[in-house]
Image (tube, rainbow, N blue to C red; front, side, top):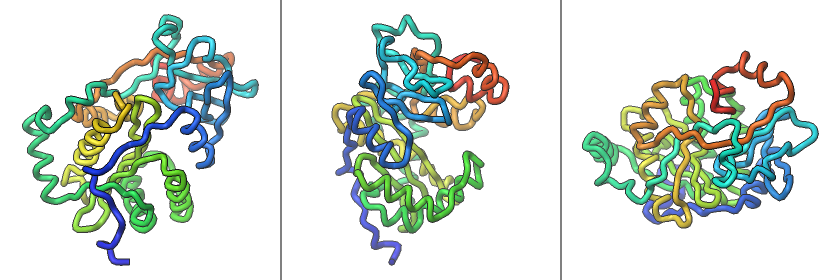
Length: 288
């Protein structure tokens, strides 16, 4: 297949469809994730035996925020505004709430200059079909993993199966940056209720100089601005140990916000997590 023949959509025509919590939970389950329902709310097993609300801004009531399974050693969920005073922790999120004013005119001169230069080199498109990711996405993933070493690297066949499952339901949105027709990076996302989430961003190292990350996020924000009922965006948890990443997200206009949560650990397990993985403990609890 010629590298110029992939089916893509102009991002100016793209919208992000907002899911209900149940639709999002079903989509996660269809992609092989363990999801359970308790008291009418949905929980995702994020670590073996540990459950979190299926999305960060689920904002359950204190009555709903209870142990979702007998066989779990911990759980965490954000709380609604009425029960925020009952929180015993927080979720540190990179959050942006003023999405209506996220325009080219409100960006800094430095940012506008970067975007102008990027548009001379990179074409940002919606990858509304899976073909380009199936053919070129794994190479981008490998480049990103070699650079940052984050997580484990799946096999090509496993990656392609995950991509096919991602596209089957049509609930997520993927945008990519094309450099001379070749995929230089891509961003996956979804929305639940009024909140849009950046799911993952993978960038080929050889194209970082183009500021492709900035271009992907800016165009994604324009999609969010015109997609109702989205009113705020979340770009991951605060990885305080990754200072460069945090600085980059701050430059994008995101702030670190501590969202009130209810968290529970089985006796002694919180001490073990804190000792073995202090940064993960911070992202789970908001506490040092």
